[in-house]
Length: 225
Image 1 (cartoon, rainbow, N blue to C red):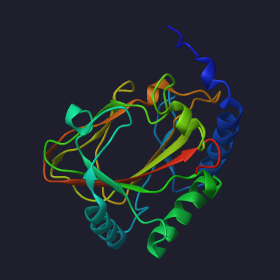
Image 2 (spheres, rainbow, N blue to C red):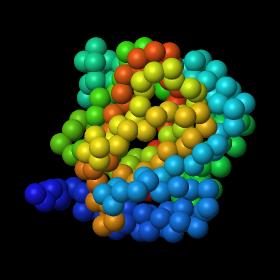
Image 3 (cartoon, helix red, strand yellow):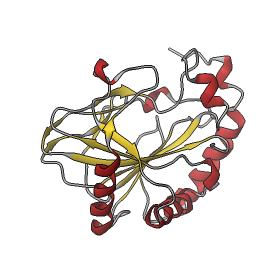
Image 4 (cartoon, helix red, strand yellow):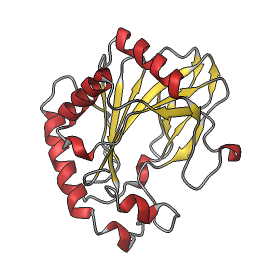
């Protein structure tokens, strides 16, 4: 069954399609990038993108800013996203360097990138299945469309070994990705036509033993502010 294309998605379709073409070409030319074998979404991975020392440094920064995670219209008590998270200082020289590395990998205008957000999952904590792209008819739609618009790409790095659980599952693709320290996972939130890809729905599964640290950096269709 075809997915209905909402009129609200058409406005930024050309920008998302162009950005997708640009990043697709850049990643294809990078021998360090591995494309996940699926035709239903564009998902990539890079091993050792973050060094062990950088992982430890990021973990400390995340611990300093971590607080109960939020999901726009939902409260922490709803149990939809039970991790702790926080934005790291974008002016920290270390974070500036990391941002430049991700920007260079993607070939996206740095002004399109959001602040890096760190996340910590303790035992039992999770993030239920969700899309990173924004849905219309929500309280935050107009606000987000006015400060960069739709999310184009997601980049997410795993920072530590998780004793058990804590996989990232793309539920519509039947794909489960184990957290491996230093690995950068990234995906296009749009399809080849520049429309939000429903197949990118994913979940941060519960940590069953130990703790899980990651960071996420999202990009928009336009300049983020």
